[in-house]
Length: 112
Length: 115
Image 1 (cartoon, rainbow over the protein chains, first blue to last red):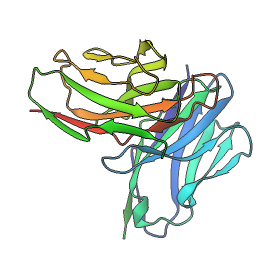
Image 2 (cartoon, one colour):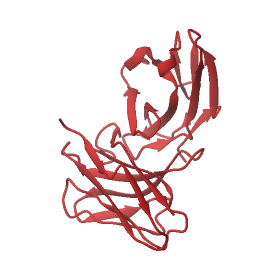
Image 3 (cartoon, rainbow over the protein chains, first blue to last red):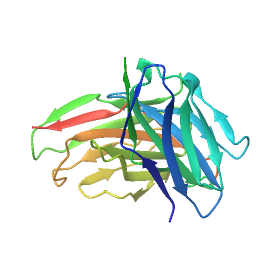
Image 4 (cartoon, each protein chain N blue to C red):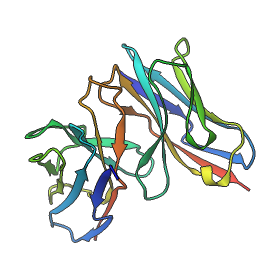
């Protein structure tokens, strides 16, 4: 069965530090992979997506993610955290364009 | 602007009352979805529809009902049978599963509080 695991329900970083949010997936068919961000009391907004082109994907707000097939991972990174990055982040997989499967989410806190 | 509109943003109801949450999209998407979000539990799929006049149960459909009479609209009714309806509800739309990348576009959400 297809699934998504986000390691760490809460991640805290200092402003200016590296952000690393981990996502591992399982899929028996070629996956499309997504990261969404959610600010309090708002809907989900697409940060970036992997659709089988370049394995290093750049998104909005300085985020990027690398698709590593051998590790079945799609970790999200940002070199320098900003206070405005504080939000909840969801990783999701779509097996061959099928129904999206979401991870449990990771809440990112940014300390001044 | 193209997008998904959910209303109302905040809704308060007494126990035992049915409530209907509205979701309208002008993205010309065939598929629409309803998710429920509770703190620490991620997104749970309630119902989805891939075509007008057809819909399928998701993982937590009990106590909810939907209709899909128009491509643009997918209202969700939270019935009195739903034991714990207080939650944040998200509507989303996208292409038919299996025909694209699976990307979904989300509305701003509706927060239902049952008193």
